[in-house]
Image (tube, rainbow, N blue to C red; front, side):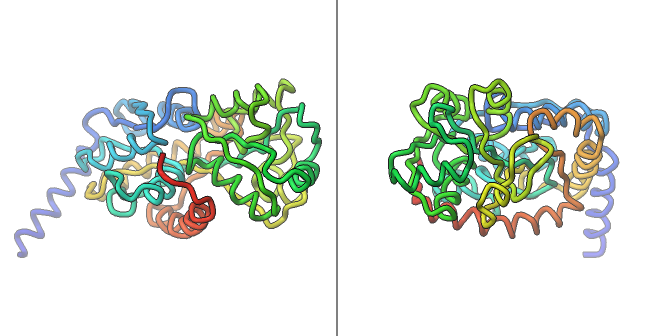
Length: 317
């Protein structure tokens, strides 16, 4: 037993000294130009500089990011396949479909959070509401008549709207689309009236006046989305939800690889150029103190998302 433990220790030290010795793949569950892809490509250059090996962004869209998550969960646990994931991938999809080929808690190890952002309550200007209070009033006056678009059942925009309905006491109708871009296009076209959208998908449209931003889903204002009130100022102090991305690796990945990835990602997140690159997309660079700190954050956040999935009554598509 003593020789076995010494052998394992030496093997771990050898792995730590040699890792990484080839390119690392950063797997994104959505198509290029989406919010996840923006964050991944922002981290790509500083991480590969710090790791001393190329970091390859690998887009594997489909099934609300479940395809990418399952791919990483079933990859060799060697530190060379990393998932960038949101609450939808980690919490919501496994709850909606327990028959998925992965379960996050069992199959994925958290490394660190890398970004955080509010969602934006965006409406078609033709709706004729100038504030969140006016939106709530119109929804209460016309229950079941306003339609909100999301990027799919269980997506963050869907869950954010579910929380809005509960806190505001309104009845609005969910219209899911296969991605954030078609959801936002439906609001532009007037097929739906509003969306709780990721900042990258709506900020340019808000800035051009084609959509109107009523609030961000954080409790307070944020400089990431200037000129738009937070929920407390907008009249819903009991409402708050944040959208984050984090890095995960397959269960069984050596601790030395997890530590090395954490160090590289943490330094990349803290780099001033990362904050500057993400800010125009309404996203904040936000890291964890350690992999254990990220795991504790996930354990607390899971309760909110589980409650929202239950409240939504959503089923797997």
